[in-house]
Length: 512
Image 1: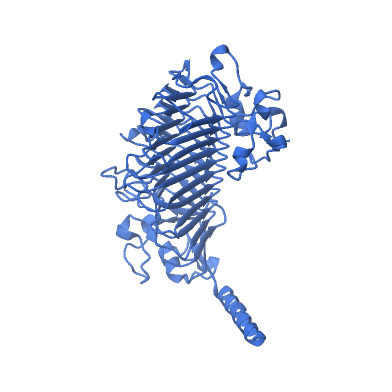
Image 2: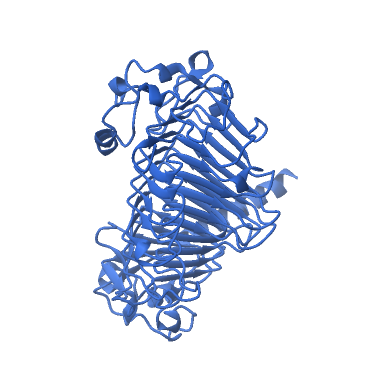
């Protein structure tokens, strides 16, 4: 038995060594030639299609300069199925475990050469379940001219973008919903599918439905990314600047964390996140933690940061914001968040240790809860909602459209809500909280220079003597596995207490 086990182990190690030894580097350069063999930097190939034709499972393609996708083959001239589909949909990748890397995303990547509708999409990633990793590259100027995903079209597979940038990817043709996703179109299509975006930059991307990401279904993890918005309000009906969902599959799990989202403008709903359903009986989970979301705007309708709008029966929404700051966002209704239409009693909205200040709308400057969201369980723990307004004047941090609010569907604990402008909550409704103090000129103790702090510190901290510093109940964070604040600084949890809001330390201790 021992001999057999030894032989099996030796065989396994030998296989691993052979696999490792067989992996090779393929060189792709904007100055290369496709007649080259791609085995050295001086014999680099010129097109991504040729590099993919040379790649075997486990290989690494090393990219130098910006590869012009508009010059890629438009037919299968290398016999491996890798070419620019239809001349404008992007280069199709094989289902192989590959790594595509550049030395510097500032100088290396893929360029779709779009020019108001005359370019091409960049990457066509369809069914890559063996896994693809893209590192240190920029995907820019993609425009599939009537198809989906200007920078990357992703359907199924396990895809990771690490330290990449998606810049100025745009879909100019806006007919019949066929051109969704300015930077990325993502359709998971399988329980094993996952898209991971780690330390990526999104800037200048534009589309009517999801300037950065259109999400149909699957698993999406966004960590440590920066989102710099564009003005999508030029498209009538535009929504979801960072993310637009249609929740069409059986697996819909989205996580955003440690990211900054700013300066998005849309025509209608959800300047950052527009969460919608097109199919009944489908569930959607969104968790946003440790994020800063500011200066976003809906011109006509709802949700300066996020709208939850589920018109389909039997579909559950579970939406959670933790350790997140929302500032300076605007909409006609729900300056920060709009809970519009959520029919199922199994749906939940959790707001834990968030700071929501300085947002504005015509109705519900901070959070607006529509009467069609009465069935949703809503919980607000350890939060600060203060200084939000209606029409730039009237204090409005929380606004509820319906009567007979009860603690079975709305729970508020250990929070500061300066003005519940709809006057639907009775005295004592919110446990261990302070409400309706703004009209009396009182503050929970946030710093008085939020814009300066956002620019320098990426947060809005409390003053050193703020009453909110020990007002939070640490248990609510522990229950969701969180032990840090928005800046990823450890929360002390002394006596099971924590600061209310997104930041644990007062201004005097930030950075120490």
